[in-house]
Image (cartoon, rainbow over all chains, first blue to last red; front, side):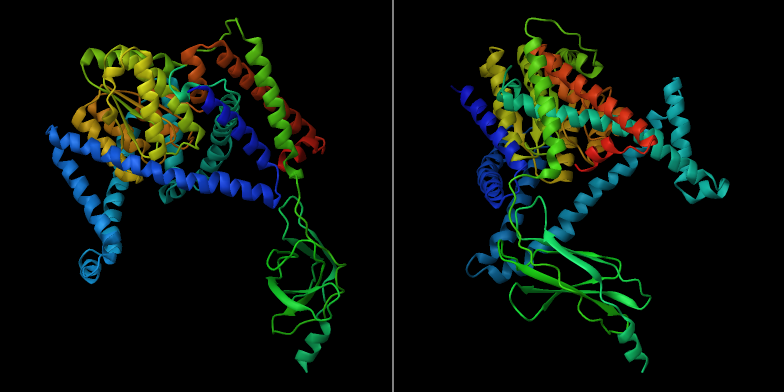
Length: 214
Length: 364
């Protein structure tokens, strides 16, 4: 029963949603709105409660056991507390103005959270350099081909390439539009078919690993 | 005098027609007209009136480059409307109203006719899937080697030998993403193997629903392996729903806990290289799997093995060797062969100006 019930729900909902996709009638759209969008919002709210419980347990456990980097868990809690305070604080009677002035949500977001995110994102530039350094070692014929192609593409994408030879940007465009696009589309067609196959396998109950076990 | 001359010259659009927008849920009427070729033309004004009314009311203006408009505001299904259009000059002058289009009403439809190709493709694919999964029963079908999946056991074994945990990152997408479902399908046998070897598995999550599903899957895998007591719920946890906060958190885990094996399987975006490079620096064996074409080069550069594109969806069959699941891969191959055949045939026919197949796919 524990396995059958979810399989039956997946089968019914899978087929119903598949049919719904082909019906533009308002009845079908309303069904989609209620069954998917509204239910998903309701379910997500409950899942967020569980998720924050999971978050709390993980960090409490780290602090309790004084695991390496336990202080980072304290920072995580402090961050959550202040963001919650800034988000809801203006509704606390008597403290609203104080919180809006000193713990303004927009300020915390714009001057702390956003720069921290940007910092993480900017690490990507350094990581691209280190990954490229490893990938572009001409050890095999394929790696050498990659190295040569990448060098051409990189040169052709910057003004220096065009000043060396004005036909280079066109060569780069050709590489990107034909060999590169052909390979990408090959992968994408395979991915598309794989997605449909996985969806159908789940709907038909052939694929059950997502329920746990085989 | 000149203005009067312009007013006199500007012609109204001809052949104005209005029809119910096809394949929609009603509430929309399409208006089309023959464009006016005049250098002094600025655009067109569209007018509407209910059938039987005398006065037209202006409802929209479009620039001269357009010769159609979709009226989807203030339309009541079943009620008939008449439309007329007039030209507007660059100096603000305008022409007479065009001859009104015959009255038209909008209606909701019950089937998206332009999606018939999708329906047909699904039906063919469904037939292939059911046929091959049934035909595969009791047979051992050939499945080519997928090195990334072949080395999953080795990766788990390595972590066991080193006495270090396994880090499993199920991507940053939600449960509605098929790549995440495929990742969860791989998590199950990996967690089972980890339970058998008594190796801790850490699964940080970005999505609350994925967190709960991953917890259940890992718990079930531990139970199947006969080690329900070894399951630690706190090892499968919600980290953050912010993309880069999540990346920072996972990086922190890699640096502090130093897992011997990192598995990045699912849907990834810009954080893919941040994760994979940090893992590479810690010296862990890394296996990545994603269908995100843009992230594949990063994983190939930074990981030991990469499960590419459709291999991700074949993983469950590959690992379980269940004849029904392997049969579904054969159906996938047939689907691919069929598509390739159509692409080649469509290309050849296009050379002879026969666009039958091209049109069939173009309406998707």
